Image (cartoon, rainbow, N blue to C red; front, side):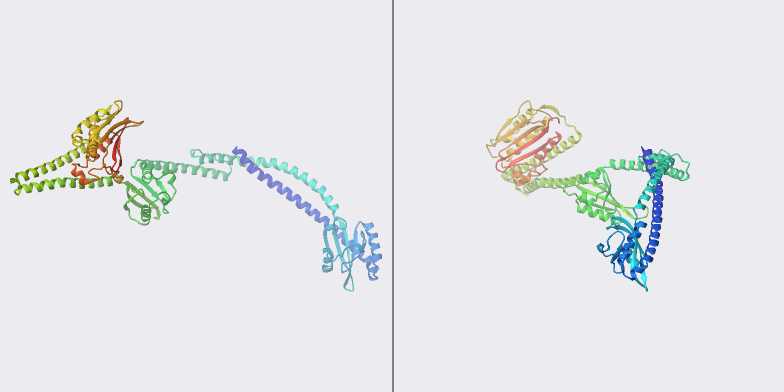
Length: 590
């Protein structure tokens, strides 16, 4: 296919050049022949005009125009030439083919004007009178230095065209024969030239497709031989360089893809040159689609834009922390400018670290320390104060000493409860991380029944009724002791915030993917603004009321951790003055 295409690119060129040359020579020859014939006709017409001039000069002097017209008609019949005599004002006084009085004024005829101004004039044009293309030649007749008339002779040029037509036909067939011969010759030449070029084209296609191991055979022609050698050397060097670049690129991509840190490179204009998957995930963008785009188009963060701009402008590496647009992720940036081999700034590279977890842990630690300190300080302060009071003499008052000791015991119990809950949370976190907990696929009803029995100590004094709805067939992979503790905490929490003689509903149901354990009460309810934090440690909606009821602020946090170690989670629904429903979601295949 390539061979035919290349041949038909070269072959028509040779053929076209030869055909154009033949046609050009034929056309030039025919035009020269035509001009030669026209020059001969013009010379003949001029000779005849001079003869007519001599014959009519006497009649012109006598103004015998009728005799001149008769003479013109007789002379034209003998010579096959049209003869016309025109006065200087353009009036026709004699014509061999027409009646003069019927003819238009000829003052505007070009040959007439040239005869008056230049001494003679000729033109070839279409005659409206005769309906033919004619050659006209006009000369002036002078008397005493003044032009008294103009003699115009004319002859049809149709005869010349017919003669040339025969010549053109002969030239055409000669050209066809020459073109056929030229086609055969040029075909041979084209094949000889195209064959090595075809081979080079074929091998060059293999080069373009990446097959740089192929080599061209060196042709006999010196020019093509040099070209083949140059292409072979080019392929060898390209193959070496591509192998080096491919290996280096593979190493870099392997390193970048294995990094947990995000790496982003931009050019001096801020367009993304390279970005690994970690950086794309951190910034929430598509790595493949982002290459080549400006960083401002794909990441809407003015702080990041300014940081990149500063990094491109500064020579020293820079470090910065910033928050993503969603406000839920913290990133730490290390950036440095890149320079090319000429020392010019060619871009910048940024390394992104996700420090969200670190920030969150720091915040949790600060909150936890503050909350523990606050929760422990109150009972310790109270215990210390009452002990000092007893030491100062109140111990001698049996009634006051007994009351103070009760208060001290109550605060000591609160301290003990806080410590016990903290230890429970610590064990849950440790066992959850190390997977030391034992789970078995069993019915969820027994731990719910046990929790309700244990809760009677709290529900009895307030005459609160606890109702259970749970089929024995509801089975999940659970740790029964932990589920019992979680439900007990929820019931205890419901008792604290419920009215006397109210009801608490404990139920379990199975959906397509989960087992749901619900504890509903008819208590005071929780405002929605607290939903996001009520499962945090030491977070209570009403701190004064919680302490009065003996709460530690850790019960719901323990419930959340128990749900988490089971691979589930806990949710809450509540309405003020109506009640609350806490739901533990346990996956069926946990």
